[in-house]
Amino acid sequence: MIAVVDYGAGNVCSVMHALEHIGAPSILTREEGEIARADAVILPGVGAFGDAMAQLGASGTVAALERYLKTGRPLLGICIGEQLLFDRSEESPGSPGLAWLRGSVRRIPAAPERKVPHMGWNQIEICRQDPLFAGLPENPYFYFVHSYYVDAADKSCVLARVEYGVPMDVAVRRDNLCAVQFHPEKSGECGLQLLKNFAAMR
Image 1 (cartoon, rainbow, N blue to C red):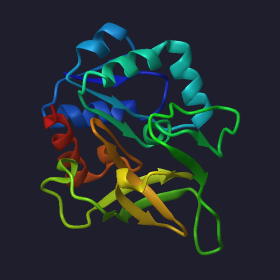
Image 2 (image 1 turned 90 degrees about the vertical axis):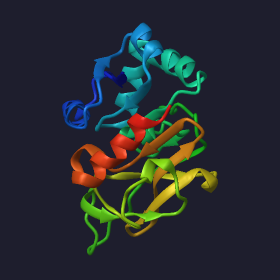
Image 3 (image 1 turned 135 degrees about the vertical axis):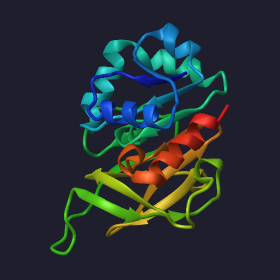
């Protein structure tokens, strides 16, 4: 069973539908017991960094997720769920992140030839092979919607990057903790394959 964390962030329904499509049983929850019993956890969502951290704190979910991670079972962050794993964000300077990975979340620099938010399909550059990318093309396309990006302090955790005015760390992994900036639930067959790969992790 995959526990999809319910903390008031948007886009949760799309993740649930994608998991149903690949035949992965899932539950939308913020209950500590259900998170503790899950085979895998997804931290999804779109929205503002500070608001998302406030919702996680108010629901008491942070401590439950920390205890879950210590069991070695996999957790996948999606979009804002990737950003929250890091120390801080320029979007919400007064709100610290979870700091499970070191680094900052920075605003994508605007330019006449470059729209912000970064929205649409982009080909990712896979930096390091990982089971998360099993069965995917060499440099697959995924769907993005974001105005801020991860700049990981420890580049050894970076699985994939995208160049959009600046190099952006769009997939990361350390042990059982992994995350992506793009939306696999909106990325067609490649996205579904990535979710299948995650669901198979134990």
